[in-house]
Image (tube, rainbow, N blue to C red):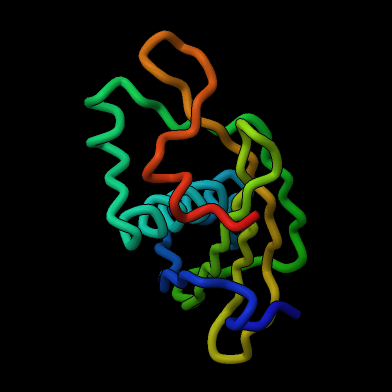
Length: 136
């Protein structure tokens, strides 16, 4: 089970009814929305504005996502998403993330999301703002 100390950023959420499927659990695709929102807030916490980068024609893109589903969330569940970023190559970084339910902190999902930056010419390039927060 992941510990909060494994991550440098946390985002709290509550499951909304419309995020659930006919089985009464969060639809698998919704978890990617939770993870993406947490990544954007992680960047914002480091004064990296996703929209401002896009306006400068610098695009942060996902090139691979690995999600290991362990349990399901249900309507009204509260949970946290932990996020940590690391450099994995000269042009790629990985977000290590976990979703854990409150109050027991039970692991719901573990993810590794690999990304890069694309400059105005569509070439891979990690912007200096992101470089500054990467852990090697």
